[in-house]
Length: 351
Image (tube, rainbow, N blue to C red; front, side):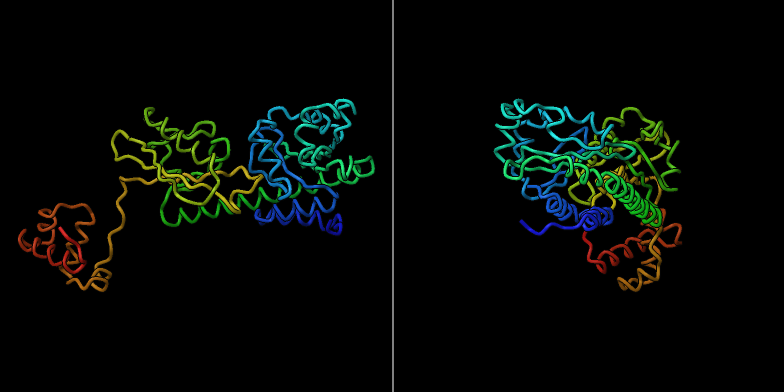
């Protein structure tokens, strides 16, 4: 086994995860070395599922734990009420030696992976309760009173790391929203429960103009559009695999204007810390807002258009019909057609 690390070094490894979530596997290994454990794993008390930080040595056991449904019959859940009173519990706190020696969970599942003795340290953030589980096998033996008193010291730094991670993640998510604001894109920040926790100025303009916000829930003013909007939000909340636009969209219709098009970006990396409520950015395009026209001199320089040809392109970008554009430019329709043909040739477009 690798040399044991100091308590301060183990605490620092937790703080490192707050600003760089990719450090979680390394932090779990550091905690395992400190506690002389087979490995460690971090679990939410509720809504337990695969994908939480853990030591590499626990990979196979955790895969079986979820695949075979052991997480639904985890006997260690009996110790969770003790966290509120003593911040830590071990197997002996809720199960007798006979129960542990005859239990299918302990001897049939845990012992197979050398994980049948544990110490569980609890901590919380505003939205969740968490537990850090130190795992040992028969070779290392159970955690005695002295070791428990030592490990419970991690409760405070774990809470501090969670608070710092939330702050860093929120700052990064807010920065992303500001970036979208700078290009005129409306965005809403959605938490893991599907609630809006922040929106930019462009998004605020759409509230009452196709979208409504009630008790944190974003809804369409057109009720028939709400199922698709809800499905889009739910699909992104369940996936934190990469920062990307989903291929799916939700359309929000409006009575007197063109519809809004809603896309979602799943937050990862610093904006999606393990302890962050930020989950998704909803990006809303207002199809009633025309994009600014390309400057005439830009078209001239980029494509070699004449000033007259570029002026026609600007009108067409504004979705003005060719006949009307010719009239506005005080040229004949045939001249406009000729300009258009030459423009298409120069920009290598085809009919």
